[in-house]
Length: 162
Image 1 (cartoon, one colour):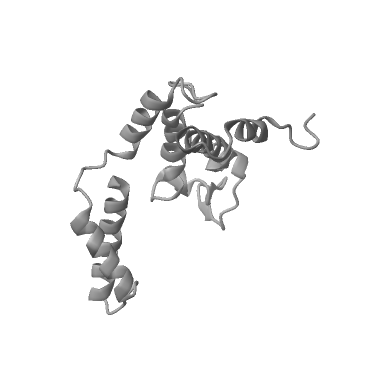
Image 2 (image 1 turned 90 degrees about the vertical axis):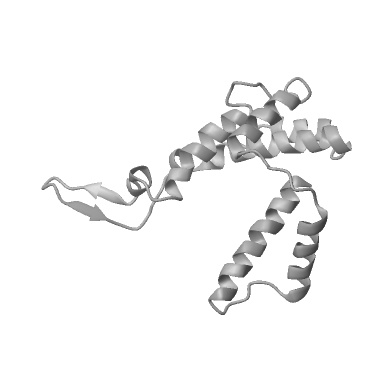
């Protein structure tokens, strides 16, 4: 519910800014629905993402198989290893520029199209872990999907890895 209100607020702010440029990003029905959500949903401050990861670990550790607080197999670990690390590629930073700039022997720089080894430069290694943990939470909370089915999918060996 809190996330829903924050989403409505952000989307309305985008609509406000784009409409000032003469561009409307949503139709009136969507805008009216988002305004209704802003009126009706409680105005509760959603903690920053890093804090939400800690809170998720505090709550779900011990309830979800494989979730180990303080390790890479935790929401805090995924936040650090994926979000914090790879956000540098989304925002202006030296780390992000390193992917498209090579140092030449004469001291010059060569800027080229981004060609990344996603095993090294992408969050995709952590994405299946995040998906698996999220599915296990949904299974625990709503009893669907079946927790054993989720565990089976994420414990299967990929073809050729046997």
